[in-house]
Amino acid sequence: MESYFGVTINFQDMCVKQPDDNIQERNSNKDTAVPPNRLLEGAKFVVWVVVITMVLRVSVAEAYRVEMSSMENTLLPGDTILGNKFLYGARLPLIGLRLPAIRNPRPGDIIVLKHPVEAGQRLIKRVIAIGGQTVEIRDKQLYVDGQLVPLSGKGKFVDNHILPKGVSSRDNLGPLTIPYHRLFVMGDNRDISLDSRGWGFVDRDLVLGHAVVILYSWEKDRTRPIWERIRWSRFGHIPH
Image (cartoon, rainbow, N blue to C red; front, top):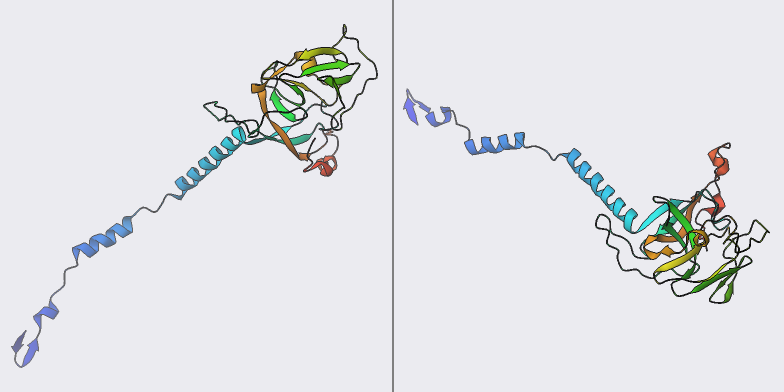
């Protein structure tokens, strides 16, 4: 600070201040910072949803559509059921390892299974007998271990004719003892069902799940609008 002609001048105030390089650098970093890639985050979320869905579908539960009439009137064509895979031991995806079962299939269970003869097809049938039991059919009447077993659920016969054993195994069969780790299954619509009476015992490993509940249902008649074909009374129905 100096005085000229009685006037005091502060040269420090007149100097131009240089900007702080550190502050300038920090501000520059803020301006150039890349925000989170929301598209990538969304893609990750979708991938995880798909993975979890696939794991649940493969190992816990899966929906199956009833296409044939072999389980009438317990299950109808157009029913979509939920199959519990976890009950009988879920099979892990990719590695194919089966987890321990909560319990094994029992007589009376309605099960979803792989077709024992035609690859790629799935069936829905009722377990009649398990390994160690003996099955016999005499004039359409079913016997397991010598005891008469009434027609299950809302099952039915549609043909009054009795086919002799030499002609067909539909109405007369056995006695047959079920091997270990095998099942004997039949459809509730006894006269038209193709089942263990024709293609034999079912390997336990072919069982996919237990039919738990009917999720929804509609008639397959495509000549009417969908809202007229919906069977509201079957939604949430538990087949037995």
